[in-house]
Image 1 (tube, each protein chain N blue to C red):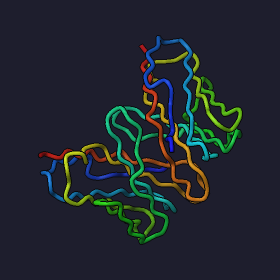
Image 2 (image 1 turned 90 degrees about the vertical axis):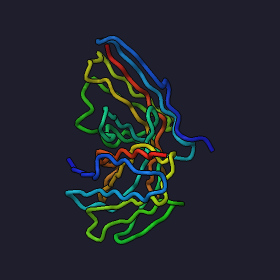
Image 3 (image 1 turned 30 degrees about the vertical axis):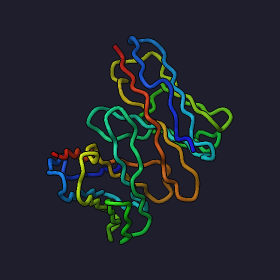
Image 4 (image 1 turned 180 degrees about the vertical axis):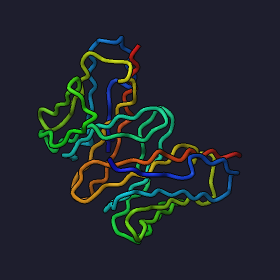
Length: 111
Length: 113
């Protein structure tokens, strides 16, 4: 199956700092999605990307669809305590119905 | 606008018992997906419905698992003769063309003792 490597695995940052995380795939995807998951809940969709090179923002979040179509990046600016959670990247290949998920980046924000 | 709902949220069962979970997708979404998530991992695809037709099944979906979506609205996932390895979070998601963005429910946490 598809392998998605997400890094870093975990991050401990001070409130107000910016955060960067990335996701790489062994295969080409035509859709990249970023989700946030909190304990005991399902993933919540943050940003969707559909074109190579696309840069999309959602409030303090910005994500990019890599030019090679094998990677994606998520940045969070001016982090706040409620940003705590696990961030997952997910990709979908051409003609595919299902998503392949990364292993997640666990974010801890220290007030 | 209601999101995806799942019932129950938690289920504890003894090994060998059968369990059934329900998912109600977002009302105008014709596509429905089941995923399984174990601790420390991302969700893994199990199966996909377009309307009432089950169009794709993962190799993770063993013979003990069956999913239905009889009227193209809600879906059920049944696990027969549960094993301890079935303990996981079972997630349902729905989407509609053309974007295919998948929206997840809160999940059903299954514990097999």
